Length: 130
Image 1 (cartoon, one colour):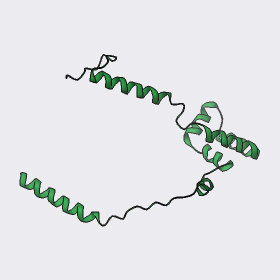
Image 2 (tube, helix red, strand yellow):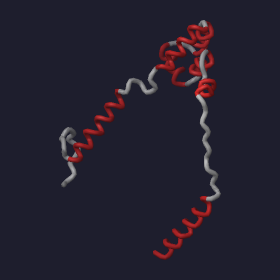
Image 3 (spheres, helix red, strand yellow):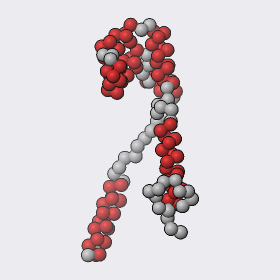
Image 4 (cartoon, helix red, strand yellow):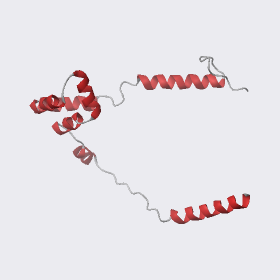
């Protein structure tokens, strides 16, 4: 049994090393800030793209606004209003205000210190015997 496992391991390693040379490496190219800004959506097109997202549509439905009403309101906005709203959306934090992440981090730290025996916060943990 050990001989069969050893031979299958050797066959796997030979095939893996043989095909390693056939894989093409990835190539990355640096782009400038101007190109990145030019390709990023902005303005009215960006707002319309946001209106197409399902989570935005469900929030509008919760508030009692139809998709057509929201699109007509965006179409009726002036260019200055569109630019202002787009800037406000771009400056919002992506993950909220971070309270949930901080609470999870504190929970994990307390859990680890409980398991190591430094604290006794959670009754469901049993410290590691030293």
